[in-house]
Length: 242
Ligand code: SF4
Image (tube, rainbow, N blue to C red; front, top):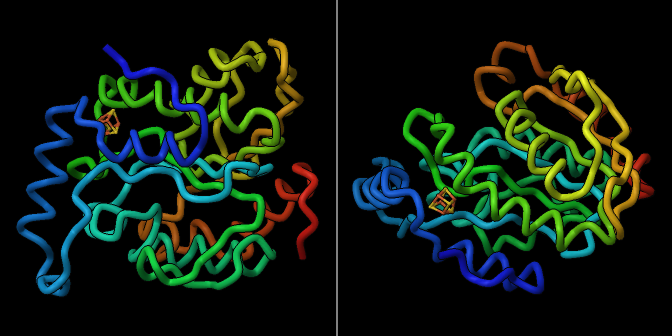
């Protein structure tokens, strides 16, 4: 049985961090945390679900895939301590949505401006590949997060096709109309979703290639490409930034 719905973002973050609903992911995240990577041998890994990061009055929501085994699963904060995060936070800082360009550990002073980062799967999966069942199991946390952010959220940037596919049905369930045929993922994709339930406002949905090393090392996603999407989404969300 699911616990009652959290009534605030801090409450949501706290209950997510205790979730053990996916046996395969629980076993993996804890195994990685115990074995560690050699470079981090002297550190204590988080080894638990990684909650979203950012204020509860966010106007812009960024949706990734899942925490990295030695990034978020180590530090306990989304995209913190890995190469993907280096790219993402540098871009967020460049467009005025983060107070610093780096994310090293949970107490490094990083703060986001009216922006929150979450993922459709909150536990690090083997090979960065959650199963459809794990994605669906974790979907209720995304649903709860969208319900809490609904009063303020006006734009979403989805990093990668997995997040896009995971998010659309949750947006529909949460009270936004998804056009038919369903909007396709692509870098720079942009669709405005009409509200389909009370207390929902129009929502601008944007796609960006994921900030994975595979994309950033090959130049498929450049800092300028990412900054363009973030800047456009922030403007649509009504956040004044550079
Ligand atoms: S992936 Fe989500 S639902 Fe599964 S154990 Fe982690 S937090 Fe819970």
